[in-house]
Amino acid sequence: MELKAYAIFIIAVGVGVLYLARRDYLRGLLSERFTLLWALSTSTGMVLALVPEPFVALFRRAGVINYPSAPITLAILFLFLLMYVTSRRLGLLTQTLRRLVVTDALYQLKLQQEQRGAAVQGPVSGS
Image 1 (cartoon, rainbow, N blue to C red):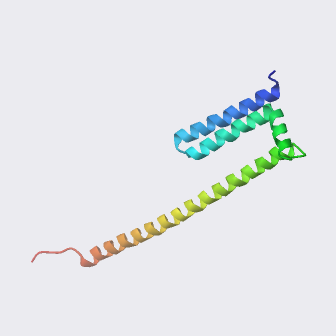
Image 2 (spheres, helix red, strand yellow):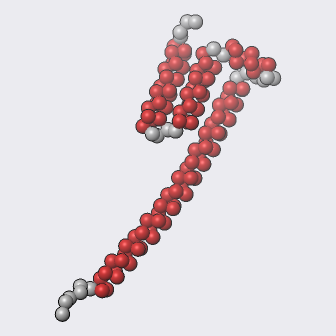
Image 3 (cartoon, rainbow, N blue to C red):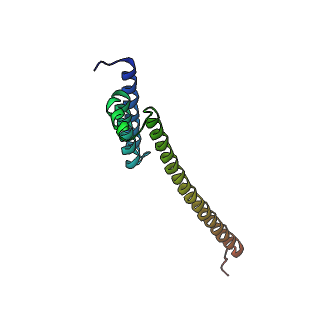
């Protein structure tokens, strides 16, 4: 197999995505599940882009008439899945943030009441 500019570009982008996913995982910004998902999808995408013949045969056996539409459809479905998971996590983070705001507000009110109670009692002087 001769490496052409297109193949070098695909390999460079794939290695870059794998590097970024690993780096973000080590920093704690990406979960293990998403790191594995990115590694699997990037590797599959690289193979699909560089050696499409086995996939063409596979899709033809599955009944796909127009081969280019199959990978595009799979990519769109993958993006839908990622958007759903991301929006679900964002919703959970929003709920957690709301709980923290309410808890902090209650804590602040409690502190203010304690400070007012201490100010009303005033200093105690001995007679």
